[in-house]
Length: 145
Image 1 (tube, rainbow, N blue to C red):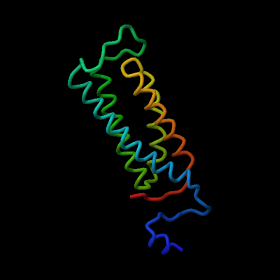
Image 2 (image 1 turned 30 degrees about the horizontal axis):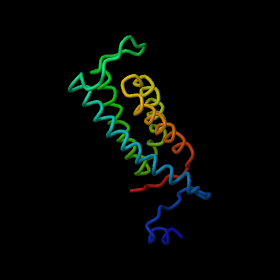
Image 3 (image 1 turned 120 degrees about the horizontal axis):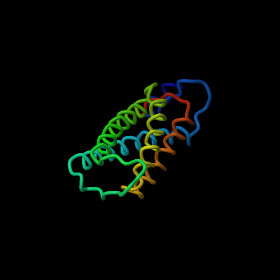
Image 4 (image 1 turned 30 degrees about the vertical axis):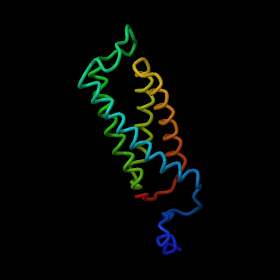
């Protein structure tokens, strides 16, 4: 049976039980979304670090950091998320737990980033919530690359 799966190019199940198509497809999609979100995070970070006037200044705000500090936060989170997304696609054991933790950090960071880019922050929060769901739902360990 494993030979048939190898010949079709589809991943094989390494644990007992059946795979849910939604859950396994969601995990692949979550890995791709993490790669994309990571790249956007790196670009956002570079823009905020390189030129502080790219984003509008916000008056008194509870979570006020300099835009350079926000840039470094987005840059570091972006690199970590992209690397973890690659790990999810490769089926790495560590990637699911780290992915859930990083997605939770993204939710918090994007909530705090809302005054600077409200629409993109809300989209990123929704993506991170989906990633958390997908990584917590699929229990199979499969390499997708």
